[in-house]
Image (cartoon, rainbow, N blue to C red; front, side, top):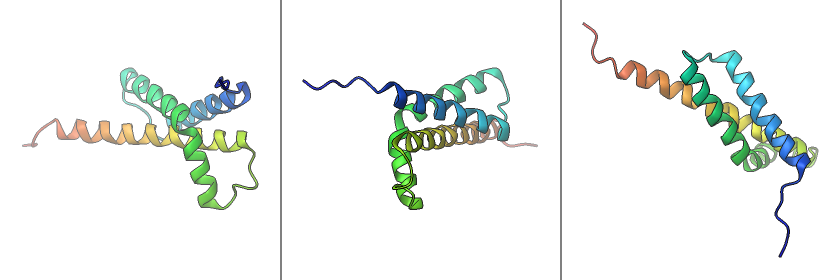
Length: 106
């Protein structure tokens, strides 16, 4: 049976990309509270870890640089992009839900 343990270097690239994506997003779209920040950070890091590989490969192929990037760079880029996307989507949905939940204004 083949060993499916993750390569530590690739896992480090995924973690670094996911955390970096969440931190960069924090600078552009600040959360309104600690609860929102925690939820968005967790969602960003988890999505960066889970979707980092396919997002990195898709981005590299779309940009035409897949032959120029190492596997670690592809993972780092994909994890950061997936993390940033999750952060922004959750932030936008929180803002929409907040404004929709208020009801009509007099």
